[in-house]
Image (cartoon, rainbow, N blue to C red; front, side, top):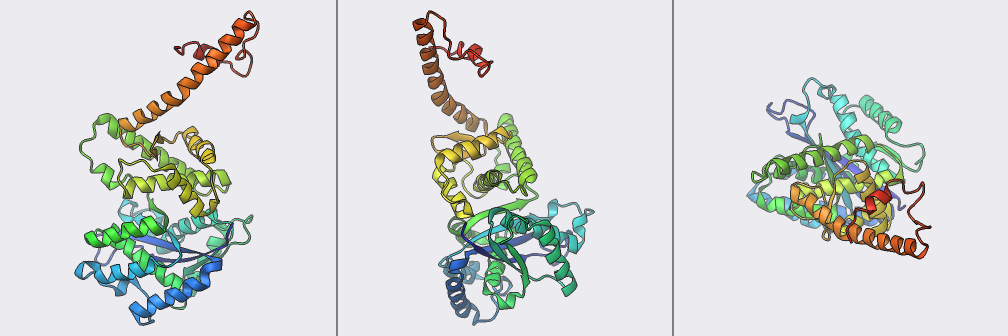
Length: 386
């Protein structure tokens, strides 16, 4: 696996009272991920962008005001798109967190929510150096480092390291700050049409995932008023099952399970930011897994080790000849049924014909489906119409 470097910063604050003046509605953590071998060139080009737009002072999202439909921010994003990196982010909707929970305390809030990002990085990349903007005083920074190393850096993956650094010394951390601030503009509803379009371009070209916590349904899906009772039930169940699987397996270090988490994250993400009616093409999921550090994943592995195992774990995934999706209405599951009927039933008919031919040829002495390996198969296949 290619060694990585991740630069991390955040946007927003820990205050759960989002109605309070100055409190953000969202807390965003962003990781800029670079191949270690390309890091030197990345930093040189990032410094040039910093000089062009910030006169080599620290690149910070807060320095770019929301004026003239965010034209300055869009120009900076255009330049950042030329850099060779990907990013992963966590968007925390603070309004969904109970105000009397442990997250009301800053140290608990920062450790646990930032820790979700660190844990995801260490889960997906066996050899990664994480450089995060230091938070709070020296004592808290020290406790934060110990917390991450004790809870999120697996002993098995000893190549991975975690460091807290000053953002002023690391332009990669500054870019993480800028991307996190841009995500915040979108999530807070302050982006405008032009910036939202640029954000979607950034997502398409650079993102390996944007997780939402607490996991919830896409606002776009909830806004649909044409859905009937069963459509809504299917959508709700599908998203609930996906959320349960992710919460249960987010920190599982089994390679196959990690691929399942990565693919499911991607399907959920596509359902939020892209047209919910669209299927996600198989090649797009395979490409996402490759970009996330899993190498070249074949279509067979995707079907048998990822999609099939997710379905075995009660995650609803609809499929058609166009690809896969998290179902949002009855029609999606009907598409899945049509696909199964077109593929499985003809195979069962052919198997039954072969079985009957051998029975006839052996005067009913040999039944290829008889025995302990197929206890229910014979009764089932006898009902398949020729």
